[in-house]
Image (cartoon, rainbow, N blue to C red; front, side):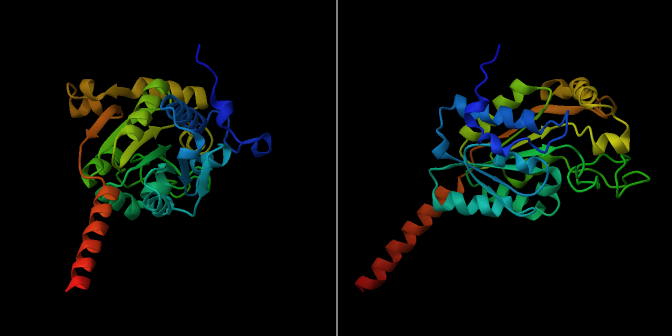
Length: 280
């Protein structure tokens, strides 16, 4: 049986009850995050949680870490500022698929390109769960939502392919059903120097289920279990066999130069140049 250590990392009881619906996967992701940080031996003072707006972005409010609950889509600029101000901090961003990839999409791709040492957990439930069930950038083609009453016409973003192509050092995916794999991916992402993206595929048993008749939280978790295949297994399947599957595992594990280190070198270079000019 797992040791129940999460209570040591939560804020006082006045922060509860939480806003998440029964069966929502956000609490599972938060639990995996806390356990990953605990296993790394990091103190609360070494970690900063940052989020934007959305169901998943409420996670930092419930934890006893330094945290910043920002505005919609802008978690990454805030997190970048924190990391540059104090590179010794472990900075973790909680973001939903809408928060990260719609209004925050430009910040997301440039943060990947910049490769700053931040870990981003993109909690993907394929819909805007907090604001009424609008179609998000990851909603499957043909799925239904408040802004897609006749079916979603757009193709969904593949979060991991996008992050890897944009230059993130570490990219991985796990579902809320795969708790231990999710914890492992988050731990590896935090340990990896550079920008890390972990996509956590989660159920939304309220609005996504309302529009798409996918059942209750347990039903949706079982479907995540049945749809998940590893990257190794996926390599042996045809495109037709991969249709409707969720490929899980590590998609990128690179060693591009980390931004804070490069920035420090640039500052040192500028200071040397200034001293040389003053000596002339």
